[in-house]
Amino acid sequence: MIAELIADLTPTLKTYAYNICGSLADAEDVVQDVLLKFLHVDQQHVDNVKAYLIRMVINRAIDQKKKLQRLVLDYPGEWLPEPVAFEKADAGIKRKELLSYSLMVLLEKLNPRQRAVFILKEAFDYEHAEIAKVLDIKPDLSRQLLTRAKKNIGTPGLDSGNMVPQAFLNKYLHVLQSGSMEQLEALLNEDVVSVSDGGGKARAAVKPVYGKKSVAALLLGLYRKFREADMVQQGWANDQPALLYFSGEQLIKCVTFTFHEGRISQAYIIRNPDKLKNLK
Image (cartoon, rainbow, N blue to C red):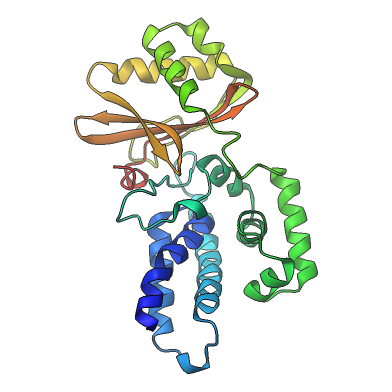
């Protein structure tokens, strides 16, 4: 009975951990560690196994995120979350509980505990009393952490309102294929920013690129560079439209966008091969 419950619950546990860590590999380690520890717990004294395991996973994920943030200090260039394709059977991620990629990027501005409170309250509709129980804090502190989180990142929507629509992505690809810099700039906000993550394992801009002229030049240059030898496909990253660049059968780049007032406001370019393996 317990084994079946754990098997059914594992995708949910992994999704909680991934939303906090921003890394599927770390999320898998967190869940595995928690489940191993649970085997040594006197389970007869656990009234609600699901609540118990979720609590353990969330707190273990917070600790893991603290370690990741320290590692990011020495990361070569910009660090972006690892995108995942929920439909991959081996990813084990639940679609309805998966945060959008653009929100995952935004959450990197928060410390791990603020991030956990924001996710639990805004994405999973926890009450502050429930959050306090999960994190072993007072409800007032939960409210304070949420207030600080919103001060840092605002109140982003959890739906697809800031994602590039599929029809717009078709238009974007058509403009890239035309090679028109003027038409491409017209698709971008004035203050658009592009962030690239190569992880020191693939060539990528070390710092963010700002402004529609500079970002347009970067995006068009990348497309021209890969056009002859590679294939560009429309795909999905965290259940939002993305462009996937292939060299033969090898996925070498994923580009996702944030959409604001009919134009692209952010472009996220993931080239670190370690972060592309769950999109293949």
